[in-house]
Image (spheres, rainbow over the protein chains, first blue to last red):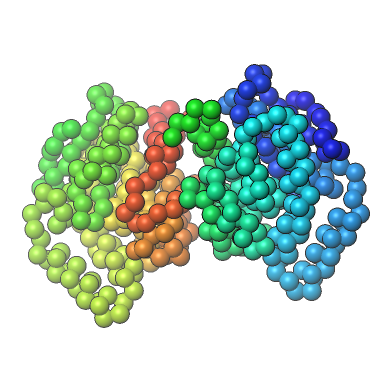
Length: 227
Length: 227
């Protein structure tokens, strides 16, 4: 694991050795950080399969300096929810705002690593920030997204044209099921698949789901596509 | 491919050679038969992965003699739909009725082959008849189901306790999406996963979905479970 910083953004790179490994960018969840236990699990699984993996701290997470402006926006979002606005809608709107910053930061990470193609992996906050990133960044050739709902970002999701694997926790207590299905539905790409598993928002993904994701990234990130 | 008949039911067995291969029973779709092109595709894929595969003609399909009584029930079902009953509900009720016959027939096929465990694979009609079979037959240890809705069979689905992979065609023109999700929801097993792909009711399943099903059956039918 190699730590580095790009434009003030702390990041880590896991690489199985060779420099030409296909790269997967992992966006972490809300309240988490670039080396949270779940991220380490995914990084370990993906590097064991021959991928390089990179993750970066999101603003006001991990080793980032405190940004009071962002915190005020989060406070305003919570106030809207307290005033009766739908939680999932308010969260999606806030994440969309944060993504205006993170899309550029994550692009800079790909630039720094000299990556000409990458996969993206992100659920929950990593989905809210990932949808705009995958839609905007042509180097991203395939994405695992999920545990996130569609409202503010549905129009952005419609611009995604690369293969997407979308994961739903069937008993998600934070994202209403219909809201999850709406985001999957909104994805513009013709090559998308929905995988739902029983469990709540923070439950671990089954091992066989990770196996399937390894196969998914293998199909779409290999220098010699297997079709 | 070996053809055989059990209690008047024509069936075929594909086997990669050794007699101790884990067995997958495939239930064909409506209007199809035990060696329809799609069934051959699945049989080829599963036998290449080391499974034995068996399929049998459903009443009034394939090489079965014509059963006017069953045809009258199908006609009555169509009349109910013409009179305004919901199509998916009427179909599910009819399939539930047919399953009272096929559950016993399929059990006899397992008996005939001396199988002490098997997987079940069936979508569309194969799901409508498969839900009662999987619920009733303890030798079935894992099932792929889908392209079918939940109404008449929801209570039966609740009795299924083995791992299920449930497939949905996201743009299914025959089974309303909510109806499909209702059946997945009704499955009583804690180990279930939903895989949805764009496309209509009769579209082929993606190759990567078949790969994932091979892995699914491999995990659950192996004599030495891999967890």
